Image 1 (tube, rainbow, N blue to C red):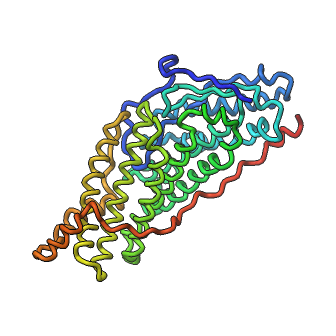
Image 2: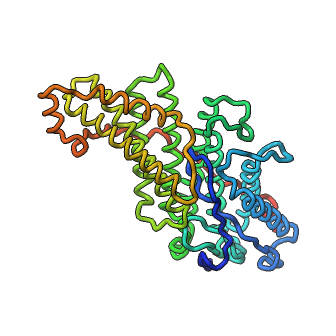
Image 3: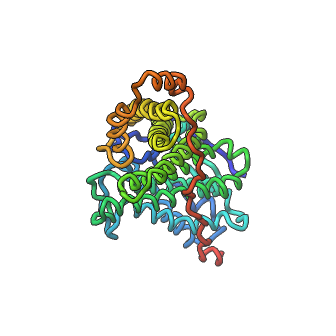
Length: 410
């Protein structure tokens, strides 16, 4: 059974807060960074010296790269490396290289799996560091970091007029499509962590996990990835002359469901320390914005049908009110520490901002009888229910890699 050691926030000061995290399309929580770990003494003669050295080298590489990358995760720059990639992709590769070797401490109930003290710096918890002597905690931390790096990559891809490592020569449309694949992959890591890794931890350790790794936060991040993937799909549908109004409404309604679920998982969690509060505000903002899109598109379809003018107007009025609220929520998110900026509007957000203020007033009915019907609907209090569509985007299926063959010689 693993033991737990937590370090209060004021004790070490290792957690760093960026002064400004720049433009944000995709929320990326601060990177959890592994603290140095000496493999040699705890493992002793249990495994070969070469395997100890390999574990140490792989993890040290992650410690150094994550520490360097953390302040720049959302910045619109990627430093080219000797391999021609970026620091983000190199850190992702370092984690993928480490995981098969790490699994040797986990698989087959290896007698060494509780010998080490794995320590990581948290970002969304009051406790600055959490140390556990269970290698499954290390696996969970690695999967979380892999997912967060993908969210960071998606953010950089979607920032307008920015070149990003590996995507310099691709069009905006190609970047949008690539970002959807990235979102699904990130969701796959998080879903696997929730479904397969968390249940393997003893209950007492699960209860002592930092908020960054709790089931609610992991599920919310997974749903965020899916919700942002649908948001990209909606923006592409809006730009397409082939996409019908019904298709756009379906995507907007799906987006509401994803963000509603993401909000439900974290609304009551005591997320704090800047990143945690900002995380909550982001989910709240996107949930409100999704409602504005859904009610607007739903109102347009009601207008085309035989629905009463009052109900149609109530849906459109709801869209207008939600848009106003989403602007306030957006400002609250960006001003929360660490501060950030909204990039120039594009996609679904630009469409809503342009269409709703200009379109809805012209659609509101002015005759006395219809105004009376609208008042009877009381607009926001009885706005028509949105259609309930099945969610179409699912996390990619993910499986842990096979244990590194070097463990077969132990």
